[in-house]
Image (cartoon, rainbow, N blue to C red; front, side):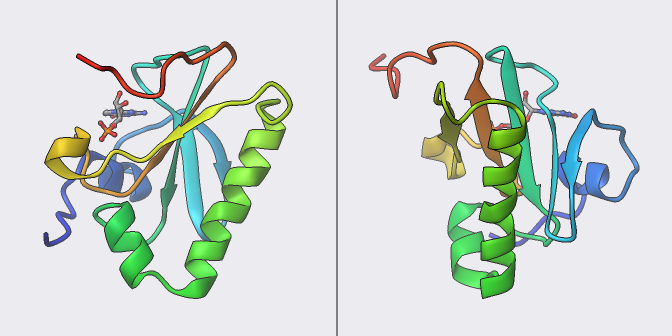
Length: 120
Ligand code: 5GP
């Protein structure tokens, strides 16, 4: 799947649409989800143009992959998610229910998040 540079997170990265930023460095931008599903619901996105987790893992450089996950660890620690625990989700493609085609990791915490997946 080709990267669509008109997706909402690409617009946020370019500063065309505002976001409630919680962290930024050379590799990632992190901001609060507009429709939070938990007391803490942060989206972490790479600055590079990657459609999905699969695309990111296949195409991103070692520095980008490492920078991404180092930032995730920092953000989780800064938001007191580590000791109590949290859920991280990367929805991918149609079956994964991915709505925005720019790779993003959801960090959900602040309460018990419940069963891993719905059985419905
Ligand atoms: P997905 O279903 O692709 O894994 O998740 C997309 C997420 O982006 C959803 O949780 C949705 O609430 C969030 N979202 C959609 N549009 C915006 C937006 O304009 N700003 C922010 N901060 N979050 C958004």
